[in-house]
Length: 316
Image 1 (cartoon, helix red, strand yellow):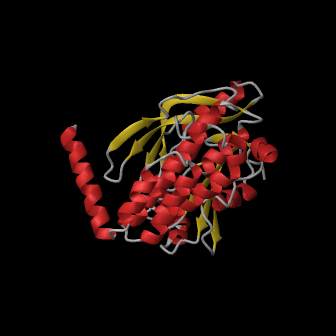
Image 2 (cartoon, rainbow, N blue to C red):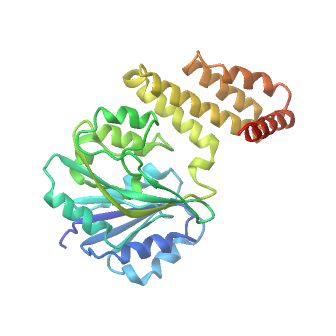
């Protein structure tokens, strides 16, 4: 069997209600030399039945069922194991592509110098109500991004697209290794950071990807995200921890997760995260104030934060 040029990998977990949108966007691509690998990361919502009845991609689609949910990075790695294409493209199950997305990336690879290993596109972000919220990345960069990636992982500016925008050469995986499965979030930043050491990036300015926020995404789960960011910090603290903006960004992020924890009534975990934020950046005073406020209990803490927000709006 002749291998396809592109392997499209779609990790999914309980996304049967939106997965058809992603699959339709692949089926509608003007470029057709591709295979689709759906990796079901332990879904319980009938995803297997959906795939078996999705006729538009019959003959192109394969379905891999993983019994225990292990996270998006592990699901993508499982798809990479079976991928046969020269190029690999990621698509989240709740996102979609414009019809020319694959065609434009394959054409750009054909024209690009050999050092280019990854190509991303501009994307449109929609909120949970389906309203357009932003067009990203705001400050795209190309070429050798090995130094610029320090700013990228520090959260100062988004310079490349999210995973659903990405197409990359199989040789990137062979050189830098697979996705880090210990990261339940920020695995894209980690992969980009490692890849930038050896490969150049190219960028397509057209809005070829549509990304959708969902209520049960990792970014809405403070516990999972805080744990993932903790792993990310430990992984890179020796390499870039001396950069003040990186340290500040990680500390502020964990501070934010601590606030969410306290508002949900988990004061013990919130206090632990406030202390963690303070340990990363001892010069800040916000965690100290919040630690003191938590002594008043969950309801009083929430009332104080609500009052502060009202005062801010009034002042504005």
